[in-house]
Length: 116
Image (cartoon, rainbow, N blue to C red):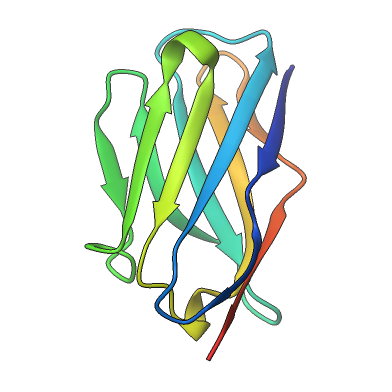
C-alpha cells in the first residue's frame, strides 16, 4: 500500500500562486503515475494534472499555462505549482498514485481557497 501526504494548500487572492507538495511512502513501484485531482463542492472529482515517472505530463485544459506539475523520483514527491489562481480553482486537491500492480492510492486532500 502507498501512503500519500499532501501539503501547501491555503487561502490566496485571485492572481496569486501556491505550490502543493505530496510525499509518497510505502511499497512504491517504478513506472508509476502520480497526479493531482480536485473536487469542488457539488462537483465530481476531476483530474488536474498527471506525470509519469519518466517525466511525461498532462494537464487539464482549464489549468494549461497556469499550473505546472513536476516530480522528484529520488524523494518520491510530486508538486503542483499553481499560478494566476482563479476563484474557480477553489477546491480540495488530492494527490494520486497509481501503478498497474497496486492500483490507485489517494491522499487525504488539501484545501485551496481563492478569494476574488
